[in-house]
Image 1 (tube, one colour):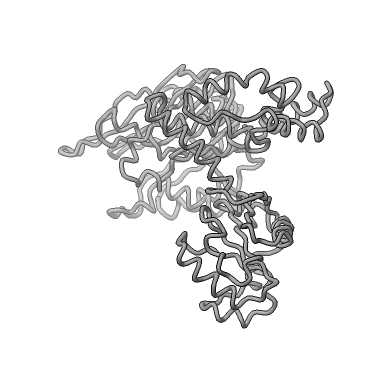
Image 2 (cartoon, one colour; image 1 turned 30 degrees about the horizontal axis):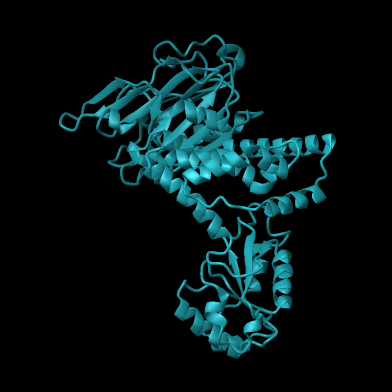
Length: 493
């Protein structure tokens, strides 16, 4: 919460000082002025009855007793309490730090003043309480969620769609609008004259599809009128107001699209880091050189200025890059990451390069993509290291490809390099995307003669040593490029 500035100018350590823990319910007597109890024990009716019976006896009768249950109705565990009038369900969604809604449900004997007080109290905490007028199994969140899940399950079971595309239909489709408008406000803007107009235009289609799904479709016109009246009172229909609301909707959607392109979340995460060029390379050169000198006898670290760099052609030997230059306007991406690769069958996870580039929103006349990762293992039926090295056009279609996969033969320990299309890639990829321009400052590093080589000395290899030097800088730094080895199993990386 502090990271995202959601503590309202308070410090975490100050908040923690105000928290006291007790291990026995009777110890609640030692606390002064209890105004609210939020029960968060497991979904076990007998346990809740037992706990609420004790709370009923121990906590003063002006305090609210609230349960976080997601599916047990309050009447089920409060009916025999002496102070049942102050008991409610206050069901949050996980994680409540990131999802502010909380369902407030009373039973038939709950005093309205305690419901009102709970609503105001949760609002004061930055939550968004919704009030249920009566008990219903599953409350609101689960009834809506289960309806969507039931439809999703039937679509997969009937062979209509794959599970991944069900999630995509929500995350890249319906949920984009629903996250800030909800279903009713969405349809209010999808017809010129609002909700009533929407049902007049599309109601028969909805009923036909719902009948095919064997789903209830017998809503009344009075319900439609009630929803429409709510929006017309809040948003009268005029040409200007309708256009303003649509522009507001579109602006919010574009903000969400921008956010999702930076923090896309799939089964194996795709994380995008935009990079900026540094004003001075002196501290970077010095940090790299100092650290390399701890490991290598001979070290040269030089800056190649843009005027000189534009005459270099990295498509030639010994570099064999797909682009003449390393490029600017750089973005670094991580597909999956080391922790995800350690999962069972991690390398069988497939990323589509065109889809990844579309998700991260990198748009150039052409893009140079390079970096180390895992080849899609089903191509070789074994783990293979991928040297991604390709250029795509403005439509993210491959224009020039020098990618290859490296395989070490188990019997001979010989390294084998195989051409790789790069359209399908595995996870664990630190992928740099640039415009491939040549006029960009470059760092040239030459080293030789390591002081010592020990088995498993991974902390002192070339890249790890450079990384250790960069960690000494006051701010984060990312380098992307290629290196060649005169000796060793794998000659380039």
